[in-house]
Amino acid sequence: MTKIDTATTTSVARRFSGDYALAGSYHERKFAWQAPTYVARASELVTAETGLELAGAPDVGVISRTQWVETNIQSFTALLAPLRHAIEDAAPSMADETDGSGTGIGSRFMAAELGAVLGFLSKRVLGQYELVLPTSDGEVGDSVFFVGANVLSMERLHQFRPSHFRFWVALHESAHRAQFKGVPWMRDYFLSLVDELVGEGAREHGRMARIANDVAAARARGEDPIGDAGILGMLASGDQRAVLNRVQALMSLLEGHGHVVMDRIGERELVDVGRMSDVLTARRADAKTQRLMRLIGMEMKLKQYELGATFIRGVENRASWDALAMAWESPEALPTLSEIEDPGAWLDRMAG
Image (cartoon, rainbow, N blue to C red):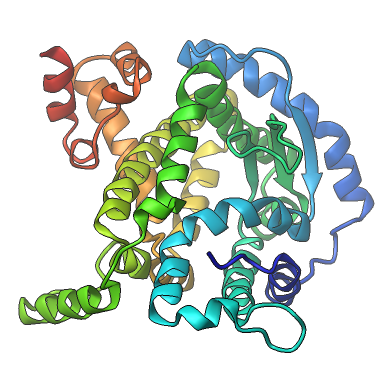
């Protein structure tokens, strides 16, 4: 399998991530000093709100855009597995042919594509909870990161009160930490999905012929051949598509839950949460971001906040907030992608 040339990925990403004047300044250093306090307070409130225990304290840091890219190369490499498989199936020799430097051409091509995507996203990510993927030495992390340049930029562009905005972002990441730390099976389940997505069992014979037939059939029906799943969904094998659906359902639940939790707590704690929420909602709807996400098969990511939050509120309205705890009982209790759009169907299944 083609391996990603990480040096090329990082180099290309730097060209797209750009600079921010206050990156590395005393404003960022002050933020780094304050960040653990925001996360500690957020953790207490999230535990009380969700009933999910947050044992211990995570590592908390304020990182650069380049550091965010380096942290996420591994997870995005897994996400792009269908594209790597398609390249190898279409031109097997490309994976092994070198460009004179000893690096495979396929590796450099994928690295450049990944670098462009990560570089663009590195300008937009505000925070991240890092647990699910082990580090290079096999250790599992438990860290909350803020991308300092992006948080500072948003605060100044929209005149947010720094202490409020930083705490609000900390609420979102602490909610994700509660999902992975407070639900004992969640991390292993997520990693099992990653293994299925990248495994050799997901390889497909006759992939390119199947894609051509799928495109022709979609056009004959008057449908977009790419669809919501994007190019990745089109390239994915049948097994990979099933896994992608499970990943999308899970992430919709987690993102929606995290979004609702941060807003519920924020409404009690912060007078300006409504304006901050409106700005971030509009930011996710940015046309350039939507085009990129759709191209790489992550358009669903942009819908996850809306669909997931609608599911969470739908369950609460039909049953109760406490009924959501059923989703954390086991992987089998998780809502499917169709149930995310029909909370009543999930409640009916759980009641049966």
